[in-house]
Structures are given as C-alpha cells and as structure tokens.
Length: 461
Ligand SMILES: Cc1cc2nc3c(=O)[nH]c(=O)nc-3n(C[C@H](O)[C@H](O)[C@H](O)COP(=O)(O)OP(=O)(O)OC[C@H]3O[C@@H](n4cnc5c(N)ncnc54)[C@H](O)[C@@H]3O)c2cc1C
Image 1 (tube, rainbow, N blue to C red):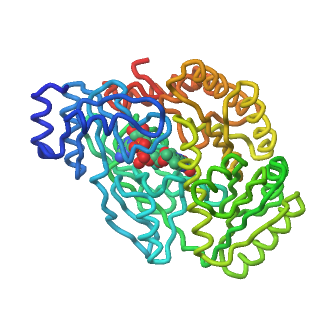
Image 2: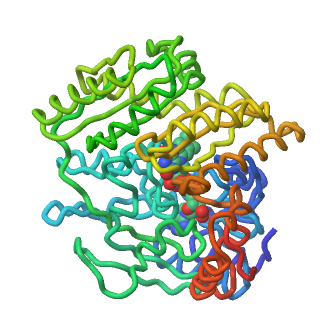
C-alpha cells in the first residue's frame, strides 16, 4: 500500500477516480500475457502529458517505482510492477490527434489501439503497416516500447521503421520531444529509435508521430498446404531468395491447424503437416501476377494444394483465423509460453526441425507458428505452470531453442522483447561491454532507477 501522502498527491493530480487501489482493481493489473504475476500498489490513469509529468515528479520525490502499461498484451512481463509501486496505465490517453494527408503522418496518444489507428487512416486511403497479432488490443505506446513487428514485417518492417518522432516524459518529470515531422532527420543521435524497443525502462511515451504509406490498392491471400513441414519451410526460404516480397508469409504447423479448426471451423486440412498463409499486395495487375507466381512457386516446392482467396471477405476470414491462433492453441493446456527466437531465414527449416527435436527430447508439447518470412519462430510451449517438474523441462527446452538461434547468427527475440521472461539469457547474446553501455544509457535517463525496475536491465545492477 502506498504512503497515504503519495496517494493524496496522485489524487490531486488526476482525480481520485483515476487512482485505483482496491484489491480487485490491483489484481486486474497484476498480470500480462506472460506467466508471472506481481501486485502493484496503485494503478493511475493519466489523461495528459502534464499529468504524466506531475505524477513522475511525485514518484521521483518519494523514489517510488513506476511501471508504464498499455493494454498489457506483452509476452515478457514488461508491464508488471516487479518492485511494487505505481502502474501508469495509458489506456485513457487514446486520442488520434492528427492525420496529416499532405505529409503522410499521424500524431497519436500512446493509448490508441493499433487496429483503431489502422482503420482510421485507411478511410483516407493511407496505410499504417505494422500489424502484430494483438493489433486489436495492443496500444501504440506499447508497440513503440516493444518495437512491435507482426505479420507484415517481411515486406514493411516493424514499428521502428514508421516512427518520425515522440513526445516523452523522463522519470524526473521533464517532458521533451525527439525527431521531427520530416521523413529525413539526422540531427544528432537518434533518440526516437533509442526509446523504441526500450521496454518502458527509459521514458514514458506521451505522443507518437508515425509515418504512413499510401494504402495498397489490392491484396490476395494464398493458402499453401503441405504434407511435409520441411517443404513449407523450404518454400519460405526460396521465395525470399528469389526476390519475391510478399506482404506476409506465415507458417502454421499441424497442431495449430487442428486447434484453429476446433475453434473456428475454417475448413483447414487436418491431415496437412503445415500451411503457409501468404499475402501479396500492391496494384491490381501486379497482385494478380505475384499471386500466380507465388502459387506456382509453392507447388514446385511441394505444396499439395494452393488456394487463392477471391474476395476481401475471404482474405479477412483467413487472417482473423491466424490472429486467433494463439488463443486457439492456448485452450489446450493451462499455460502457454510463447518463444520468439529468430534465425536468418535460410535456417528456417533447420530451426523448425530443431524445435521438434527439442520438444520430443524434453517431452514438452510445442506447436510451431512463425512469421516465417522474417525467420521469426513462435514456438508455443503448452504446459502447466503448477507442475514444477514440467516447468523445469520447459525452461530447458527454451534455453536450447535460444542457444540454437544464437548458434546460427539469430537473436533471443525477434519482436516480443526481453522483459523478465528472457533477462537471464541476455549475456548469451550481449557482451559485458554492450550490457555496461546499456546500463550507462539507463542511468542517464533514470538516475534514480524508478522506471520499470526489475525489468530486463537492472539499474543499479
Ligand atoms: C495473442 C498475441 C499476439 C501477439 N502478436 C504479436 C506480434 O505479432 N508481434 C509483436 O511484436 N508482438 C506481438 N504480441 C506482443 C504484444 O502484443 C506487443 O508487444 C504489443 O506491442 C504490446 O502492446 P501493449 O499495449 O499491450 O503493451 P504492454 O504489454 O502494456 O506494455 C509493453 C511494454 O511497453 C511499456 N509501455 C507501454 N506503454 C508505454 C508508454 N506509453 N510509455 C512507456 N512505456 C510503455 C511497458 O512498460 C512494457 O514494458 C502479441 C501478444 C499476444 C498476446
């Protein structure tokens, strides 16, 4: 429970109704999409930059830990109050402030839900490409702080690639801006990109300026069905090698197919070992040509059937299913841990085989989903966190997947970040010097160590 004096001050900044302290309220903010839980002492909902600034001044004066939070869909425990204190929840700062069609950018508050932004700009024939599977709930602030990727990464990149600038509040309470409204900007160090992906450990994001693209005129979704998962993996590597750039290139294994069918009855083939979901987009003529080319490519690589959707409604239905994959699989066991190790795309097939081998050897049930075009594996590890012996095997399997990815030049995390879930693996990828440099950066932004303490980068160490 926070010092009553502090609660009083917080109440006077935002009003008592936006400071939550009841056990029921606190429990609601004690978890995200990872397996751990930490109870905060208060949850505060700011509505303006000025309020955020004042809250941080109080937190600094009393040295109270503050953990920022968007929708809490993060997969690494990043938005949990690991050291107690205040959860600063941005869901009430949710206005789209400007859509600038002349210069193709949008200015939003951090609590705007990604899919709401996408829908709004699409009405003006503009396009915000980053599209995490969680886009219907995740916020722009969370996406910036996690550098969220998603299904269109293979052609359009990730959140970082669309940021022009930010308004941030430092842990001291001082507000400042980074970047500019221009597409090009090389004035000094790129603080916008430093904040992007910093997992809420450096500063609070209170405004985001994001670049937009013209909306592609047409899109086709292809479903390539394989009897052998190796052929699906090889198709992905060959498509990329051949210089074809689909908008999305997703792989689902047989466990995912079955879970989706049980859940949504889409007519997916239950006897297949893998399905690739592939989108091509652009001008109508280019799209028709690319769809035919990709279909031909899949067949040559061993697809037993390739279905091309005929309408936007069919496209949507297939992608809704893909978005539902995590939920569908998660129903199978009490706990589902999502791995996110990423490999160079030419290692995709080898990596999938390795995951299968690790799963069998450790007797751990793993379903494989992948943003395959990016080499970004999402092994979904099904388990029961109440079973200590099983969780030991899960930990071992996770460590082995990470080690394999690193051994082929990959990374611990392609998009879900480190949080508390992967903090222990950091020294396997980063040198001591790199970690020290990161701590020095953390100290510069947050000398008191009050912002998201206990997360991946502890300061003081
Ligand atoms: C089913 C499912 C599918 C997913 N698919 C994808 C995917 O395809 N690609 C992908 O990249 N991720 C994916 N994710 C992970 C997650 O949705 C993303 O990381 C998302 O960007 C988190 O947004 P959020 O609003 O939920 O942030 P939260 O989980 O609330 O917070 C994430 C981090 O950002 C910090 N933070 C949040 N808001 C602010 C702010 N305003 N200022 C400072 N720090 C802040 C928090 O402290 C925390 O460290 C998925 C998750 C789920 C559950």
